[in-house]
Image 1 (cartoon, rainbow, N blue to C red):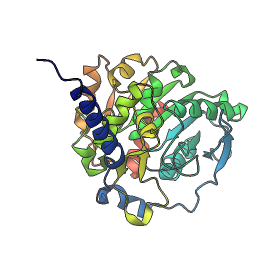
Image 2 (cartoon, rainbow, N blue to C red):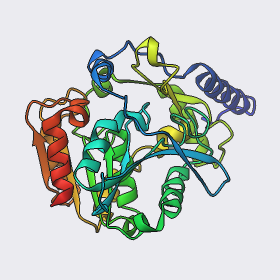
Image 3 (cartoon, rainbow, N blue to C red):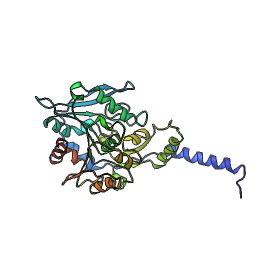
Image 4 (tube, helix red, strand yellow):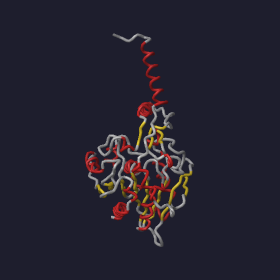
Amino acid sequence: MSLSASAVPIAAIAAITAAAVALVKGGPKQPAPLESINAPFKEVDFSDLPALRRFSARDGASLAWRAYRPPARSPQGCVVLIHGSSASSASLHPLARQFAAAGYAACVPDVRGHGESGRKGTIDYIGQLEDDLEDLLAALPGELRALPKTLVGFSAGGGFALRFAGSTRQRLFDRYVLLAPFLHHKARTTRNEVGGWVSVGLPRVAVLALLNGLRIRAFNHLPTIAYALAPEVREQLTPQYSFNLMQNFRPHANYRTDIRGVRQPLHVLAGAEDEVFLAREYAAAFEEAGAHVPVTLVPRAGHIGLTLDAVAIATIVGCVKQ
């Protein structure tokens, strides 16, 4: 039995209408604040936070970063630290400060779409963050460019570091350290709704994914994910991501391909008490992808605690110094 000539246009119109509704109304809801993420930063001393510096990206944008130098000596290496979702360079201040004390130069950018870099919550195209990172390295003083380099990424930033580590540009760094990295929403390491940290506008994501498959990217600026920030910090941080930023600040959809593509030394660390990801599953997740990667679980450390607690920070610095 064939469809009538009039039924086909009606079905097409219905499908287009449903997609339009999902695109307009299918965005993320604001999740309730997640205390375990918000509260720890209230105890951090930011009195010695370095002032922001600027570098020019290839599109002419002025992007922000912070520089940490060892006191009274030449650095033995350079670490680039990538913050987590919704955050900024300031969130990694305790870790960067300790790297400097241990003799390393630490460079901490506000990833585009965060802090003082670009338009908050969005980027121009998927892949722009890789371009920005390469441009940051090119803008470093000659002394730092000549040093051995480690890319350290936390949470979503750890996922992005994995994306970079599996790419054709991976040799820009000598090694990679992933701190409680986000791998994929279906990875065995991910708790439901990432432990309550995110709300994803699934209807909008589905339509945008379909449109991007057709090379239609005009709506990629729409927000697709929201974070469980406390109301008092939503203006300072980044409460939502656009589709472009959501897709770029993470591994590729086939994260196992990223893992298999890594040729540089790679180490994973996570807090044993991580409430956002299932830390005990990291080793198996990498083994499933065909890679044996050393995984260190820091006792009694939670997700945010991995970058704030003294024992956890010492473990991370020690890992880079090996």
